[in-house]
Amino acid sequence: MSEAKFVSALRFKWLTPLYDFFVGATMPEVSIKQSLINIAYLTDGAAVLDFGCGTATLTIMAKEHRPAINITGIDIDKTILNKAEEKIIQKGLDIKLTDYNGERLPFEDNSFDRIISCLVFHHLETPVKQKVLAEIFRVTKNNGQLFIADFGRSESWYQRLLFNMIRGLDGFKPTSANAKGLIPSLIAGAGFINPVIKKKFKTVFGEVQIFKAIKQ
Image 1 (cartoon, rainbow, N blue to C red):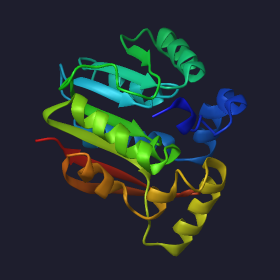
Image 2: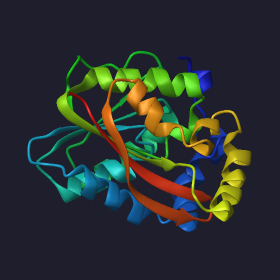
Image 3: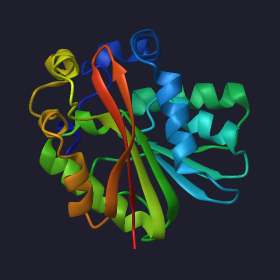
Image 4: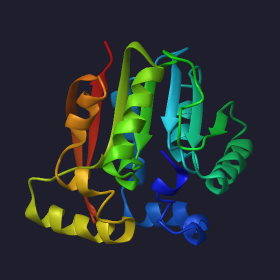
């Protein structure tokens, strides 16, 4: 994986400062992320990784929801991590942030009880999705769980049409697997078992689905 394979927030780096405003104004962000947290059933003392944490909105929400978790946010975009750090300092929360170069995740095998990720995977081309999921599988503990909220193939033709709007912004190649409904099979291909869709959200950009899977 190389950094060039990852699409920045809102695709173009000059739009990064507008990321929180854009997502909040156009998506049911809080509802999606709170549902992701609830479904992940975070427990005290759990080691949690927020993959592609961006400005740490989900990371912060998870920590505030269950203060006794040990949570780490990771992202490839150092600029957006700077915004995340500012938000965390303002909140006075104990959250670790780290960046990486798109290659091997900087963690030991079997490090995390829960992996959460929101609206990240549609930025990655399919081969990169596969490599990232393999790395996530490696750092997930046995009986640990993966929870991803991202765009999926809707049964509604209208939602599929709307998804073409975000595909135009983020690129048709990285969003191809999402549009085809391949996320569960990619998760299974990385080694996780029982990938299921736990919840669906209709949005102005298409259907966001929450996927759950287990490592055994």
